[in-house]
Amino acid sequence: MTATDPSTSHHLGIDLGGTNLKFAVVERTGNVWRTLEQGREATRAGGGPDAVVAQIGGMATAAVARWPGIVTVGVGVPGLYDPAHGTTRFLVNVPGDWAGRPVAGPVAAAVGVPVALINDARAFGLAELRLGAGRGASSLIGLTLGTGVGGVIAIDGRVHLGHDGTAGEIGHQTIDPDGPTCGCGNRGCVEAFARADRIAEACGTDDVEAAVAAARAGDEGALAGLRRVGTALGIGIANVIVVIAPDLVVIGGGVAAAGDLLLDPIRDELRRRVYTTALDRVEVVTAELGPWAGAIGAAIHGAESGEPGETAGGAAYADASGLGAADRTGETTRTAATTIG
Ligand SMILES: [Zn+2]
Image (cartoon, rainbow, N blue to C red):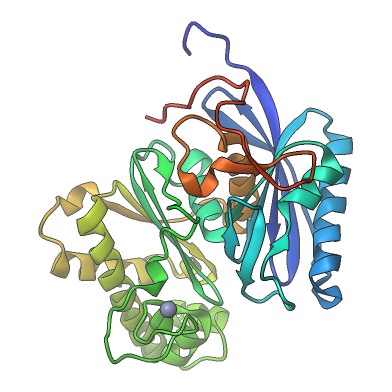
């Protein structure tokens, strides 16, 4: 601890998914984060964006009533958003027209504290970096393997968001110029080989859970499928390793339950392709926080938004006026940026 008393503060994170709306209340004391409460309810996706935004506001209002000390809210969204205006641009797996939909403003108006948006994969990476598998890492590559392939990079202790929050889309780099089509519009992306349905297809099973179970039971077809998926992931991860020389690669999502059956093919591919940095200093591990990483990371993002050093993709907050975005950099009364070892 430094000579300054670390102040304790509470922060709410909400993770919007097509199936579940999850929340986490986290406590920050200096550099130390812990989760106080977490929960979930079914997303009212059938009601369209208006119903979903109202549901997020209601969940936030209830959490703030239980924890009156909450000073920020972060909302993780499964897609693209506009950090300057607190609006969504395009969401995956949540029906309706989300283009230009205000989210941060209405939620801030409901709860009376600042609200910041973040992509759900970047939230996953931020949570793992601060209190999960990435604790103490300087630079990190994260992949969350689900319906799609979410990606995140952290550099020098901060998740890199880019100017619009889209940085880190490791899953949408081309690894085969003529490869299978990808939902993003490109072909041959990492995601086109490593999203859930393609993993199941590669393993000859109905879904990823069955693929993991078959591989664990020694099924040769499933093991070969996971090796092909691991090879594709390894090529994509190798490309990013040579660019940012991370300490750590964190793999999350359902198929991460395969453990070394998936990680070993990734490690093998890294050894075939990375010659510029010492691979014995790059660990490849599975994520620690499970399905709560998105909500926890959203809470941390809300807490850190507006701090000195926050990148442009996260600096903007919708303030409690609900009138849209206000860049709170310089307005915050919290002490200066956390130093992460
Ligand atoms: Zn793609």
